[in-house]
Length: 234
Image (cartoon, rainbow, N blue to C red; front, side, top):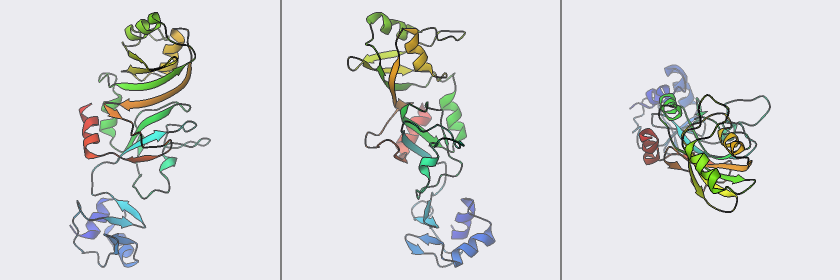
């Protein structure tokens, strides 16, 4: 493929604009300054950058973020740092990227960011019942009755009870909770329904995709091809 066409396909500019960028030395191919607009590249194998930012060969963008506390799950906010703000300064593309669903401001853990609207819609659809697993730190230990109620469904003030959940005890006041919905403050409301309170909350998996334990809070990486396939299967 011609280099100028590749750049146009990535919305870098019009054909005339990208030719100017190439002449100005703003484009590199495999770490070497591009020589001409008609330079031939292999879009699947060659590393192309514009102003130091790597350009993907094509398709959608998928990132895994370990969301820290204090950051909001939004693309922009006038008061707080957003999950998209965390991508600033990186050499990876981020135009059009948005979070798939939301984690509360004080919740940390796995969050997917993408520009693939169709996949995001499927993952968030109430009809799909996509699994979401959280590590919950509660104020008090759960009783066996509490576990049974959470697993059967509890009243959180909606028209219907929550869908059956799965509880796996981890420690005295810690447990893994898997739900299949995404209602507002759902886990906090579920704990309140059994006379308990959430002290800390961390999402560790979503749609079969587990949080990379090597990612510190605030860090992110691109999903592998296999991980993207996991989400599509979910």
